[in-house]
Image (cartoon, rainbow, N blue to C red; front, side, top):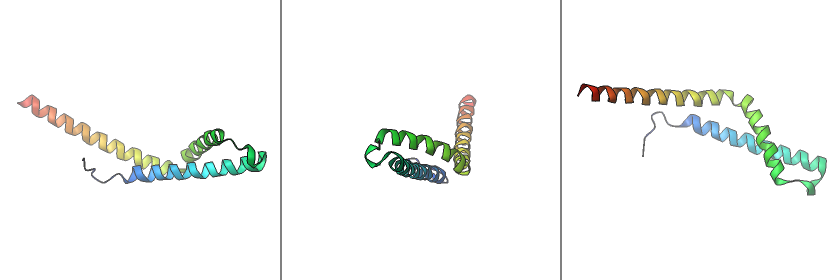
Length: 95
């Protein structure tokens, strides 16, 4: 198992908040749909599709800071991996 220096906090926070925004959107869509069209006419597939759309738009604006922190962590990790690869390749060229 690979140890992650600094952990994966940004990933966990961003993912948990995305799930929370989706669940909230789903509850809002189901509530509004049942108020407008009646309780018996709520279609599960369409409510999930609408909730995905609403949560995607909402999370774009609401979770900008968390998304940027997660992207920074991924970029730092990719840079470290690239530097380590170049170092190993340089050692092979010397030998």
